[in-house]
Amino acid sequence: MANQFYWQLPTAGDARYGNATKQRRGEASDPNYPVFGNGVTDPRRNAFSYFDYIHQVTKAADLSGFNGIFIPDHPQGEEPWIVAGYVARSTQRLKLLTQFDASRGSAVYAAKNAVSFQRYTGGRFAWHITEGSSDEHTRKQLGDFVPKQDILARIDEFITVAKGVLTTFPFNFVGRFFEVQDGGFQGPLSDREVPGIYLGGNSAAQVALSAKHADVHVLDAVSHDALAQQIADYRKAAAGRAVGFALRIDVLARESRDEALEDAKRFLAQTGADIPADDTPLLWPGFSEQHTGAQASLIGSYDEVAAALADYAQLGVTQFVLAAVPHFEEAYRVGTHVLPLVRQLTNPAHKQAA
Image (cartoon, rainbow, N blue to C red; front, side, top):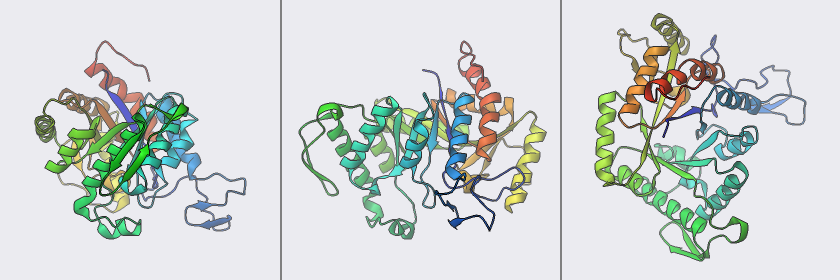
């Protein structure tokens, strides 16, 4: 199967080339403009809002050859399921990889929402279930008081119940966090496709949960050697269960390496971050993490970045979750100049025009 490429939507703000500070592009910034507060536009007026910008990024990903979009969850960002529903009608083929944590509520209600998503999108909906914020105070601000040591157990039950009511009637379950009696859907809602399940993490407990439930295990950006070891460890723990691997990594690619380095250093200067003394590595940890959440970025020419992604694919990565700032312009750039090269390197018989 050919590699799949997702482009991340900026659900919690983006930046511009001339100003790398995080902002909500398209949102009214004129102090005389009628807004309720920061980031909230009066919907009663004939005005554009940040959702119009998110729609633009989605269309850019669609037109430039991505297979799907990744809709991240952020405590101060737009709600991912709402965003998924907002952009779904404007695309015909993009997969909708939607991130959330199991504290969002009832597993049965989430499953029912998924049925509707799958029915009107033609099965394009997928779940990236996370543990939520690592900060306990932040989780409590969102109404999640489950102790940290119980979060993986809650995800286990959440997925078990969601799968159960989607595929079985009657479905009964009694657990620590969820309970269902004679559940399951009937009629047109019955026996529906379970959304693709994406899980992540490198601890033994996280890998065990992923090996039990996931269709795709999401890996953070690290060196090729480190990633190869993580995949080997995962496959050993999965004991033969076939699981795909996705890599979440940012990219800053330009026609030449010098141009990429110049833009990378300008971005860091605008954000007030330190500029590394050694700019020879292709992988820069933490480069745009504050904007996208990805732990590292590939910075180089189109050929260099494409070759590095192809090398990850050779290690077993089948899906890439990519991002760059600003998301709209960079979607076109990466889709036009990088993805065709990666596809050619990983499958020379398949040359896809951007």
